[in-house]
Amino acid sequence: MAKTIDRLNAVVARTMFASLLLAWMSAVTPGSWAEDGQRPGGALLWEDSLDPAGGQDLGLDVAARGRRVLTAGSITLADGAGAFVVRSYDAATGQLIWQDQDDRGQGNDLAYGVVATRDAAFGVGAVRDPDDADWLVRAYEPDTGAVLWQDQFDKAGNNDFALDAAVEGGRLFVGGITLNPTVDPRFPFNFNWHVRAYEATTGALLWQQETDLAGGNDQSLRLAAGHERVVAVGNVQTTAGHLDFHVRAYDAATGALVWSDQVDGEGGDDNALGVAVEGRRVYAAGTVGADFFLRAYNARTGAVLWEERLDLGGGPDLARTVAARGGRVFAAGRGTNAAGNLDFLVRAYDARTGELLWHDQADGAGGDDAATALAVKGGHVFAAGPVSGEDATCVTVGSGSCLFTVRAYAGTTGALLWENRRANAGGNDFPVEVGVANRRVFAVGRVTNASGGADYVVRALEAGSRGAGEDLH
Image (cartoon, rainbow, N blue to C red; front, top):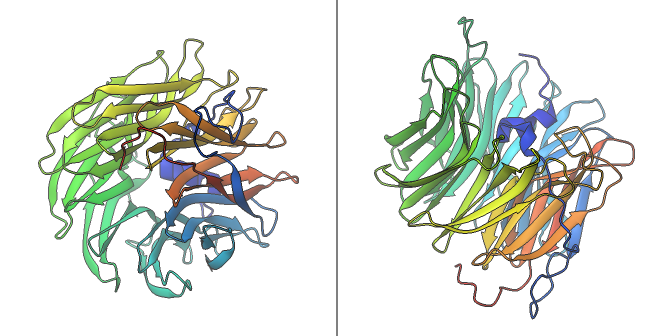
């Protein structure tokens, strides 16, 4: 593989599809409310835009906890190499508290994910050392950023990537991909699905599990933990060469595989892109047969409780992310409209039955639009994605004019509460992830600067008061 990892392809590695980073343009005024009698939401509280050397910089993940906001991504240095970077901010003011930057001088290093507990913060990603990418996990003291421990894992002298993480019960769980040597011409790259569990305080490796279904390209993309289960989702490659939607649930203490599920649509490429665990249920979202796909499982047994497979307009529909709270499940992604364009799509379901409770399909200006991130807090649902401007040219990563956008909904009714769009000058701007804490919404991604480069950006918005009648807890 080439020595350089492109930072825009980091989004693809984390989300599988560059085409997910599409957008929607709403007629609601930024920062306004669609309902009366509530505290205004959507107002910009602060923004941090990072461009150390005029290159292509990108924020990939955000975790909000208490008074701190953690972000992860990659920045370009003066020598053109990319650096793994984790940053901690004061949630109220945006002041930078600390930063961890790791540049091995060998190529592009990236932090793909970040999670936090009361006692520690964790960043996961990949660094080059010296000719291949190594899986990297770092634990930090939350107030100072001092490194408490780290795991740099090189399986077989090839490229390994830690893509996502979750914390539960004093353990840190990290999912990603490791690369095996291959001579099979059908599979030029043999990525293995990989999950590792650490003791959160010391970094001691508790267990690891690897999946290589048929000698092909298997990828653990997202991870969630809860109720003695660790659930990883992604895709596995069959002997026929196509990808199947795949879910694997492990015993959190031992790593033993408890159950798995593999879905093949019609022989094409299917992918699980999002996962949530709440109570006794697991929810996995993605695409099957080019349709928006959501499936609910019994967390203990893996029994399928309900599912939705949605084909809106005959085009490529997709569920990018899923969240569950207060007896409801929310999935966001994209759906094809009658004109053949892709729309920003958010759907809410009854968690027990799968009954559709509300649906928002929005077409901004006739371009291709999609939601890429989702968070639920205080009775509100927050969805984020790049959106098409009036010229309707937001098409894909690196192309067109896209607006960095966050939208807020009432969780019970789906009423649009507010939308915030960041003005740009015709660049390709997009949020990658969104988080919520203390009535603030934090979105991380990239924005185009005046010189045509891309800045690593973090935006803090007013979440607004909890709406009347909201019962999400």
